[in-house]
Length: 238
Ligand code: UDP
Image (cartoon, rainbow, N blue to C red):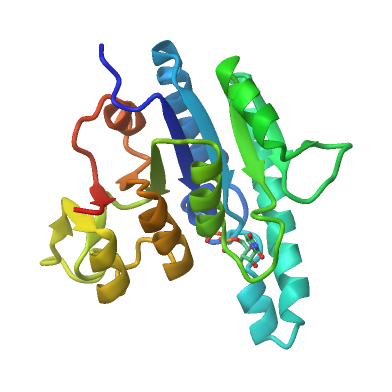
């Protein structure tokens, strides 16, 4: 079967890692994500995953409680490393080879992020899990996803969520909310739709990287995206 994308960047937010729990890591979700990754191995596409960290710590919530913002952000970046290691464990249990690379060096547990090495791993069929965000405070892991997708020549960002796309209103609260099949970067920026923060969305726009917002917990969705079947909401230049 013909694949649409040969290299994808999957962004897993802390909310996804948390699953049904409000805090911490849900092993069931990790198992599902690992299984989905195993399912697409046969297509031999390159996969990089950016781990979020909001299920453990967010810099902004620390600073709201009086903590220095940069310190809180470093704690948030460390939280993404915890998620990345948990994901690596789940992937390896399913026989999916992976490497964790961190933007803040911590050599005893992971490789540092080195662009060419990350590319090489993907070419060898290893999933590269990118942790510790950009390594800089005041950024988010969505911005990390946009940056790494551009650097690593990924053709698309798959933004995994627990709902099947972008809605005009919160679908959990309003049963009559409408799902968008397509959006432009400008729609996202002007309407303030909760796809990605503005830094991330504009980086995607400048580099013309499509974003697909989709429900990662639904079986077969990653495979459908890879094959170019319509899933969730796609954000492009229009
Ligand atoms: N963070 C940061 N720089 C980065 C990426 C992340 O400082 O380049 C920090 C920031 O404090 C953020 C936390 O790490 O709140 C967790 O990342 P994020 O909120 O993006 O995770 P998600 O929303 O995906 O759960």
